[in-house]
Length: 113
Length: 116
Image 1: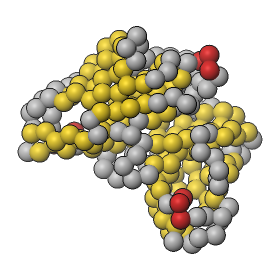
Image 2: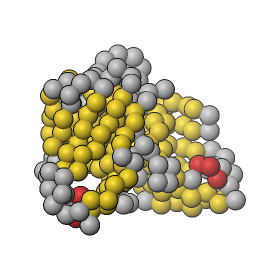
Image 3: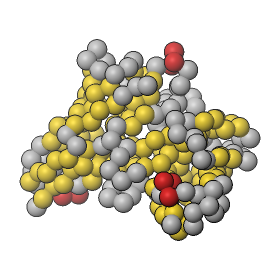
């Protein structure tokens, strides 16, 4: 089966610092999504990014298909950024598993004031 | 913004008992999904459905059944709950077709299940 590895597993920042979260995958890509999960809460989609770079406020997602990796950059972190960040991969349409997401284990981020 | 609701939000069940988790979406989405999340782990797909009256097995279907009686509703059924099924369960929905955000899944708030 396909593998999705996230790093680091956890990260502690001082408010204002930047963070780079990584997601590596082992098979062909159809789409990559990044989610934010509040402590004890649901998931909120941050990016749908199968390739290239996308921006949303202080967040930037970059997916490089050839290198089988996707990253999430958080600039000028705030305490409200604390939570878990999950990447999820949907396999190539050729595999017939079109809509099935495979999640990484997540990166737990704590931003201290 | 997509709206997916789940009930109950939390439940305590006894080993061997039957548990039904319900999910409702108001977005006219074709696809619905059930995932479980264990502490410190990502989500794993249990069952999914792309049309009413039909369900498909996900990656970890053993011990679970699913039911999709209408486009809006999708239930997860634990016929004989076991200790190992203690987890947080998330329902999600997505549109099958179209747009920049094809495949984007929208998640419900989760149901916290404790089996004793």
